[in-house]
Image (cartoon, rainbow, N blue to C red; front, side, top):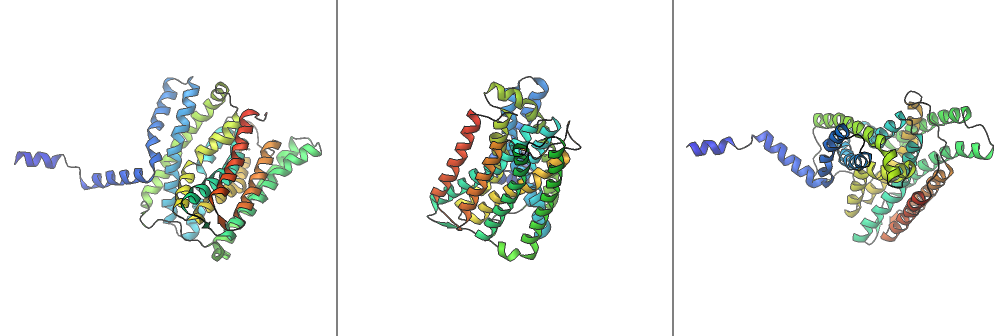
Length: 382
């Protein structure tokens, strides 16, 4: 009888057992969550050895990846409980929260080059690396895949509009030799308000007045159960705080670490921050492509890029008037503008037909590799 009671005493209660099973299920669904161990490691290292910039840089990069995955999952869980319209609005607003928090930390530190590089890099990474990778991964399993080309054209058009808005301040200051100070800031402020308004009207168009044009095969797995609303909100708030902490460490170490590793903040922002911040979305896009749900992959890639260009970048310009040493403008260096334009045109061409095969992915990834190699070997000056 004593042995029986002893065995019963070590059996976890049902709630703990359910929580353990849920955690294991979530870990199997998102293997990137294993990297969550780097979060306390980088926070502890920053307290013990703040001068270890290179190690802090690598640990913070590894820590941001699982936090981004949790943010994405929590956002989906909260959005699923709010209905289609409010859920889609929340998903669109918080979909790039990781990149936004990292950029805010860099903005507070006055590293405008890193912020602009991360914005341009996120746009190019989503339109070339994520979209090309989805085409390649899906095409290797399926001979030919189809997707909603109306939705893809709409997102590509929004992206092209935002790229033009970014091109204008840089082009005017270069060609007309206009003083870059007050004019650039005033123009950037007006363009930011315009882009946010266009983004809001675009969401009204796609989610309300013409939503039938953007129908797809569905975005949720039947076997996947969303988290309870309370759990989603708690995780969303908690993980956002951790992302802010790790982002501060990342921004504080990136400059010294980049110099030691032979990189510049421009390369780190354009390539590293974009890949790390979009890791969770890339995992979802690639998995959807393998499952022959290319609508979801294309929507994530182009929708995220358009959201960064039309919403995240303008918001950062507005916030820079209250955070950081001086306001930030939308004036990018010519190389970044050229890369964003080329990436936008490539995405338009790739999504024009509504069909994809694996070699289309190879071409998009090749363009991305050209950009990455160019930035690494010949980075732009501040």
